[in-house]
Length: 251
Ligand SMILES: *C/C=C(C)/C=C/C=C(C)/C=C/C1=C(C)CCCC1(C)C
Image (tube, rainbow, N blue to C red; front, side, top):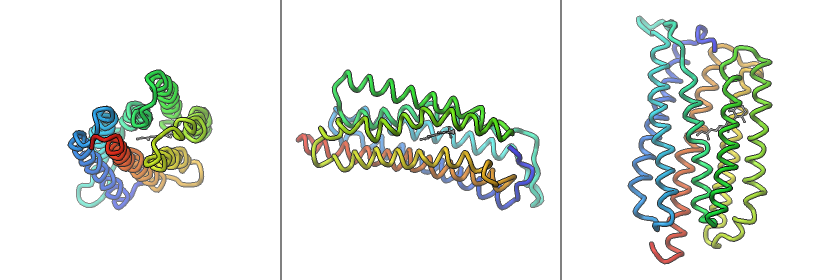
């Protein structure tokens, strides 16, 4: 990642995006965990995990922000690189933990049979972890060919997950109570649409964006996608859990 061509404006913009990401994730964590008692016991694990995802993300946004600040010095109004590397690993470790958990959230709120819950969590969670692991070598490589190769490899589990969400869950969604079927469909769609952002953002440096503009687009792009995929998705899961609790007579 070439940080040396970043302008002071780009540096500040990315810094603000990280700060905003941290605030949203921390607030979502508190909101989700405090709302846990508003859902029936059967759905509390889904809400606990939703808050856990945003908590893990809040921690990593703090680390990402500190790493970003350490990589630059803006003394006297001119931006200089300090030589401290901006650590991309925080993002990938965050995703490795949170991406499988996001799918588990969706599976738990559907309240499938025990065996279905376990098998879907293992296959979807496993595919999600594999997708992240395969993306990392390309993300940290300066070589366009390497970046593209790992994009292709990571797209294989990604397409499998999308297929499972769009086609594989159809049967289970049709068995959901009518008042939440639309919302659960919406949650699966939100996952597909918000996740689609990541492989696109990853391609920015390969489609003509260079230097500071590429770094800024990638970092701000991932931050927006994370807010939608974790905090907005978490609130949607909470809404589904509250509706189902109500319908099942323990609101
Ligand atoms: C909260 C974080 C989330 C939901 C992260 C999701 C990340 C992805 C769906 C990443 C996918 C990638 C590809 C499909 C190919 C290129 C490499 C990745 C890792 C960016």
